[in-house]
Image 1 (cartoon, rainbow, N blue to C red):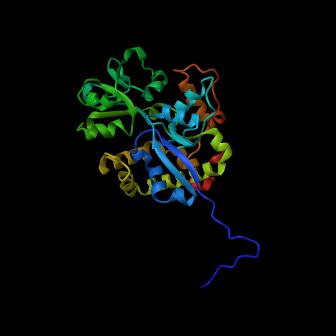
Image 2: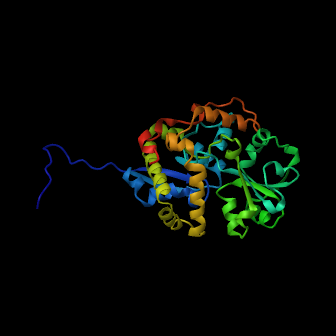
Image 3: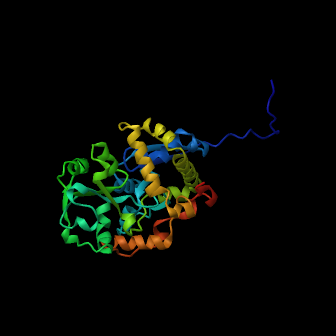
Length: 331
């Protein structure tokens, strides 16, 4: 038997225990969660000495509240929802530390057969707006930028559960939603792709960022290396999803309760092409923000929200936890 040599008077070094992180997704697992699912399934968290427990919330408002209270250490939340939440007088100083969706997926999804063939042709039509929808909050800025009269577009409040069914049945002419969600779901319901018109806000001048990773300020202060380690793992998971979407969806399907691999693969390819792998990301790498663009996005929010004080990028985003630039570049 061969024994490892231990110097007299010194004990063999024990590996440090993993750091536990409570992480919250803003909705049940689907293709958009691929970076996090892959980080868990491919051992990326484990390689960073992290033990990550993932749970699900009902939207960004809830994930922000969980992180603010300390119920979750980190979470996925819409950056624009965070900007609004942070403007409250008693808001906890929660910040984003990584942008997953470099372009927000906000969109108007319409039926050409209902006479909506351009953004301007929405005037005189009925726009279905689901409870808690985030896209409609930037609609005033988008309409102003594109010379559309807000009063000329009738808004009908609907439940999120009937958004696609109502558009499919022709009960509304268009809906607001996410470009990687409603169009894919509608095609799955049998609506021909040629009948769908998808007006992505980003294509009409919106500077808004989308889903981002946020962190509890106390956790960030006490365990900064764990935050950095988590972001390295997620960055690696995002790179994997971009390089191997088919294999990524095989892994995602094992974590989903419902859905089909064909549908989720289409969703993943859509979100990568439209929201993750943007020109900004190809130039600057994953995860970061541009201060000037952030300022423009705040101006958009200000069309629908009266700020006590408009925030700077540094008020909302902390880039000190991001992986090294070379590790965030898209190869």
